[in-house]
Length: 160
Image: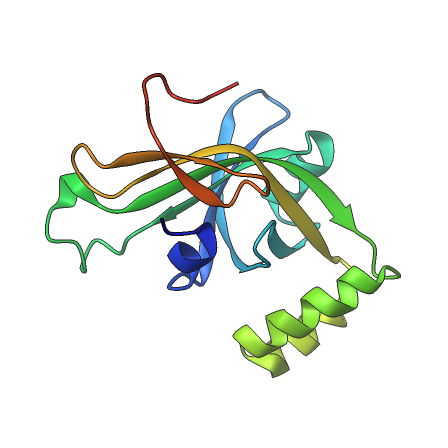
């Protein structure tokens, strides 16, 4: 059975779903790093999704196959994670460790420049539940000890 790490290797950005102060959902995206347990995003306080996360520390993380690579527009591979969100302080060793991975994954000069901007913050999205779909009739829940494994569906959506 595949793990979330294997499935997310081909992605560089995540579509974020957050809840605005008006109660309506808001969608955006951010580059991410995944450490086998949590999805990390490094975003500006000026961004609407950052303000939403700060007010309501929950978000959905959505990964979807590029439509130009899909053979069937109705059956694109996709992963949706419902997450609790925490802010990682710049003083925390985790910040340094994760930002090193961001530099390895993305243009290190750009990441270094953004790290110098004090309005950018690192957030950890911890999956609470999720699902993965790879075509018609091929759907899984996300589970396991670290919420990083595909679990065959036995009925129901697996949501809390």
